[in-house]
Image (cartoon, rainbow, N blue to C red; front, side, top):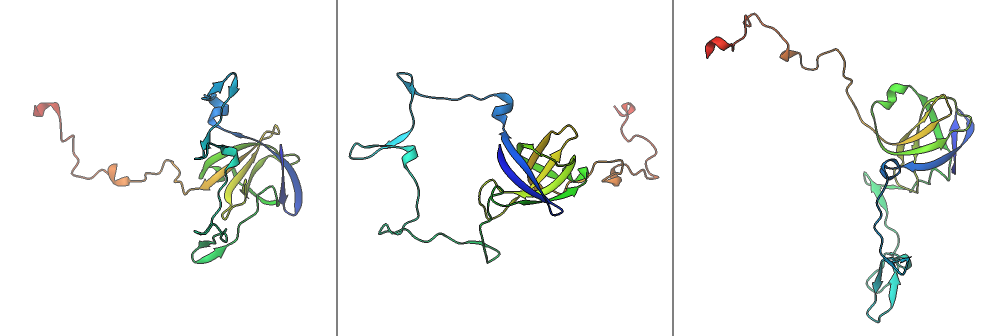
Length: 188
């Protein structure tokens, strides 16, 4: 498990991030592989001089036409330079206790198992970056009473609750003109 540190009301809480829950982990996966003499083969490129270059030996770099490396590009948001935020493994994340109804409007994209340590059962809001990024992702930490905990990463959406109130009342509005069914079998 990868160590994560959170801060809840000034108290440091250590947690361990487990594996990402994927469709392959839930339902199984199919891997296609090519083997020769029992050894798996990997992709690569054949250079014009006949040299074989494995995919692991390649990398990308920004360079000008003469081959000189250029400076890294700046990221702008609303014409303002944005600094790259460190990974959640490099700095403590702020936790804030929220009601369970906050889970309703959350669109989950990634789920991780979590060892929450001494964290009390409930729902907590934070941000999460697996790697350095310019925009941290929203996250919810769900801790159940039995010690089971999950880190849910995604975005919040405004969702309307479905209830007993009618969203479109004009469909069910009865007027004085409605004295009977306008279509009946006697019309045929």
